[in-house]
Length: 332
Image (cartoon, rainbow, N blue to C red):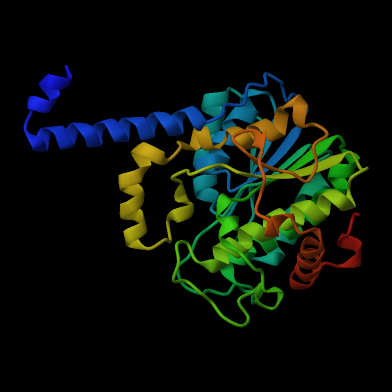
């Protein structure tokens, strides 16, 4: 066999070698992908998923709806959310799927959404802060906050605080923050530039602001866990792994080309990327786990900076200021 291969033209041998390497890479990444194995039902439980009209959020919604949960899709684009709802109901057979408007880039919208939930929902068992975005240029929201930071971090930070009281009443309950391994690209965190007040760097992949938003999610997960450790509410964060979703819709064109080439080999499908979110929502073995960082349904070590509890407290306090968190909105 080896003699036969060696007798082939050089170009053919090189092509076969490259093909073999690509197959090995594909197998390696597939073997790494974990699947949530829990069969637990969610009947009688209410779940909110932000950004649930597409990608990981939609796949998470489908799975939890199949388990019998009342699923609230918290989305900015109602038209797309309604279409997603139809898909989720059809695939799950569960009609208890609700669409609610939520624009994380507007603190007014976050407060309005939370007020609606508190008025109309009797319980909240799982909150999945899933929505996210990537942009390549600086953009401010109506609140004067950097768009990525508000969508990925500040908006979810406020939402979590506003709904925490209801989650305590519904305990045991779970808060799940979808972060990213990209947090590891941040070696130092400038507390004076959380909102790009001093500078804005978009020269790297995604850009520094995206990294900031993801490490802030982890740090605030750590600090919130310490604040609510005896409340019956747990909070954990996760990296879904490399998943080609609409989060990259505003990324540079060269990045889309790279994704197109790498997606078949390295990237998970949205369904595969949703597995850790599902695991943290339903699995018995994580019922009492608090303040941890997960990937592929297992606890993983986040970066050294993301484990700095002193820094976590400072980021939490700065975030309170940015969203103008009022005394009556604190439930810890």
